[in-house]
Structure formats: C-alpha cells, structure tokens
Length: 331
Ligand SMILES: [Zn+2]
Image (cartoon, rainbow, N blue to C red; front, side, top):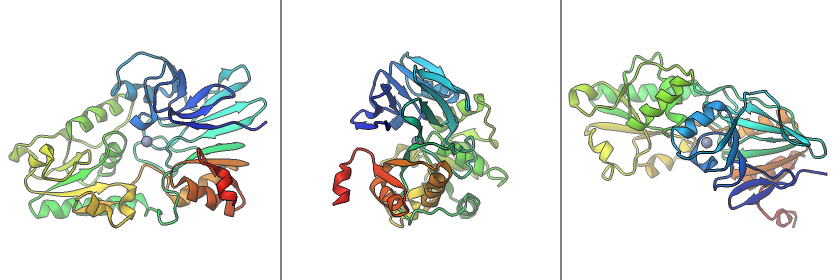
C-alpha cells in the first residue's frame, strides 16, 4: 500500500503513522527539518537535529519533548517504521528525513534543501527512496544560479566599489542561515565586517555549534567605527522607513537572494544591486536530486510545485504537486 500524504492548513501529515512534517502550526508531533520560522511551531513533541533544536531555542520559547537525532542514526518511529536524518545543505543542522515502513516502503522528505555545497551548512545527502516529497521553490527552468564562487566575486567587487566611493556596502541577507553563508563567503577578501545585532547573536550561536567564521564585529553606527566596513543585515524595507538604514547615511545596498535571477528583484527590493546566492536548490539541482534519489513517485511542494511536477512527468517520473486536485491536470 502506498504512502498517504495529506496537505492540511497546519502542514504535511502522514496519517498512516500520525506524524507531521514541518507543521507550521502547533500539532502533537512533527519532524522539524530546520529552524526557519515557516517550518516550526510550538509542537508538543518533535524530532530534529541537535543543532536545529539549539537554533529553535534561540528564537522560540516554550517547552516540548525533543528527540535529537544525529545524521545517519536510524531510530524506531512507530512499531512498523524507522526514521533516519540526512543533511539538507540548507543551513546549519538542516535535515531531510527518510522514513522506512514495512508496508509503505521508504519516504524521503527534503524540507528546504541546497544540493551544491554551502559555506555554512553540512553537505546535502541524496539517499534513495521509493516516495520523495521535495521542496521545489525554484522549479522553473529560468532559475539556474551561477557558481557561488562567481556570485561571491561579484559581491566582493560591489563592496570594494562602494568603499572606494566613500559609501558603506550594506548586504541584505536573512538573519538565520543566509547571513552566516554570506559572512563565510567574504573570508579572504580582507573586508572588515559588521553584523546587525540579531545576525550577530545568531552567528554566535552557530559558533557554539562548531561553525567558524572570518572576523566580524557588532554593528556600530559611530562614523569612525563604521568607516571602511561591510554591513550584513536582514532585508530592510524602503530606505525612508528603515530606522536601521538611517544610521548609515552614505550607503550602497544589495539584496542577496535566489530571486535576483528576476531582473525586477533589484527594483522591488529598492536596492542598488541584487546577487543570486540562494540556500535552496536551483532548477538543475532539483532535477539532479531526483535522478540521485531514483523515486517511483514524487510529490512537490513550495514555489513552482505544479510546474516542476509537470516537468518530471514529461521526463517519465510520476509526480504531483501536494495539496492540489491532481485530476484536473489529467484533463
Ligand atoms: Zn528554510
């Protein structure tokens, strides 16, 4: 009998074993793939890596039963099933879960994942599975990212240009995961870096988990302190509304996101530049991942889930977007 996979308003549910996957509203028990807020809520009981638990604790109060699993360590989940976590390459501690069931076969749930190596996450694994539930944020062919080395070379050139013109380069990167990857990518560039207070706090947590970074300091708006530094901060709204940006009168801003592939991103984010560094797999890596896992059946979720499922079917892999009326597609 195949796996039943239900898409509810709380998240993805596996009714046959009554476990949730990355439920975003509180439930009884859920696997938590990583510490981003759209993948975690105040569940009574959850399974995750020790690093994810530490990062969740840094951002969310409350008590719960936590099961911390090391990568590659199989644990009994129900009487008929085991669970094993594998690195997802998305951020520190991010995990995919592989559930092996006596009747339903194996199911791999990716959570958010990045197949190419990240500078601030464990390398992504691609274990074989019968059923694959995968995130497909960038599931359209135009989302093919340049090599990260090229993107970092461009970011470093942008920073040097800004500094040479007497401005402070300000890099917008999400607080958890992306900021640490950007900081790591500036290693060796001889650019002194200041981190926004919340980025600084979470980077310290990364360090307690064993991550190493080039030197950095906490943001200081005093002109003498700020001069000559690159600033990494969470994305700011329009420069007129942002109290943080107002502390940096002469600045050049850049958004760091996979969506920078869209030319409109630079205008939409009201930045001077946008660079396509992502913590998600691009279109080519989504295809490569499916080839590596060799599933019999794929469910897609997040982003261009319909498009990517259609692409897989055209390539002879049975695939459906989660939570849609798949019959419609057959008409
Ligand atoms: Zn995420």
